[in-house]
Length: 219
Image (cartoon, rainbow, N blue to C red; front, side, top):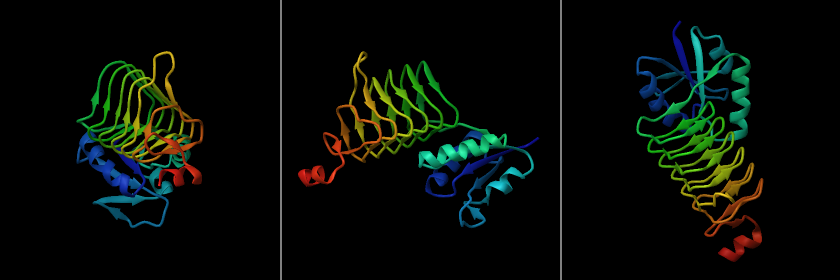
């Protein structure tokens, strides 16, 4: 039975994931986009199917969720698994992965991503171009790294955290890791030097909570 590889999300990130899927599974593989929005029937030469059409497509279906919003990513992952559709990992050929790395299913590792040693990563991790995760880090489920995130050693990142483009997370200590809380947001370009509580948005250098008062203080 032929495999059909679906990229859930016919938008900007999906366009970037398509060449990686072609590289990984061959340009002759059947690759489609899956999207439930008001979108065309074709994108970059691939058919765009809604979820029902994808489920009913001939062949063994596998899918990757190319959507940055982690809550939507989780919802779609659950929906696909309930229909028996396997979630596959995407990994650019020039990624660097060193030793003792553990990762849940559904990851997307874009070009020039580096994972060093002794790292534990949960489900559906997305690491965009030029991001890295250093030694002794623990990354939760449905975490999103935008391009060029620098996550240094002994950092723990909670589920559904979002780390913006170019953010730098300073190194923690073996007995006291720096923590990015569950659902926290680190703004683009922020330099995080201390732990961030659950659900908090931080910005700036050094990173502080995103409030009107702090914005005025920094401008």
